[in-house]
Amino acid sequence: MFVACLSSCVMNKASDRPKFLLRATAGLLIGAGLAYLDGYAFGGETSPIVVIACLLAAIACVAAAWGSDAWVTALLAWIMVPSVHVLKHARGVPDTIHPNTYMSIGYLVALTLAVAFVGGAVGLLVRKFGRGSS
Image (cartoon, rainbow, N blue to C red; front, top):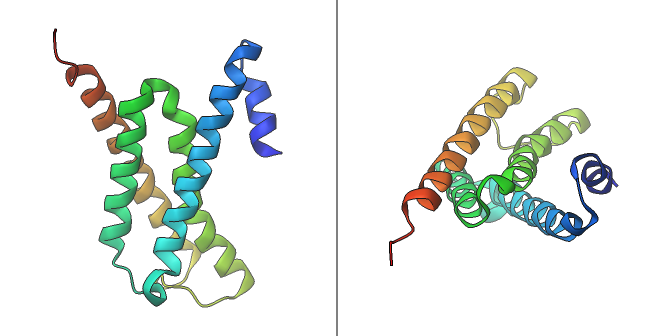
């Protein structure tokens, strides 16, 4: 529902909708994979550095592939990581973030947002300068 509402707000033409939905779905799948890696893979013992590196690489790849149209993919992939921690904290479920407070989750939001911006910038640079002249 959220994706459908968002797509109706940002689409200029009906022909853009399938591309937007593809990019939104990719963002949700990437974000779900990152959230799983962060909270559940290997019993929740995955290093945060691995999660941050995967977030950076995933967003850089989609930005390199889709250019500035990858913003929705990056947004949805980014928001999934801190959202899982917020939901776990609100429900009182044990979590891998220590201390498990809203303040530390806020720091996670800021850090992952910065990483998402850097990943997007790297991807856009690769897209711009990575094309060989033929």
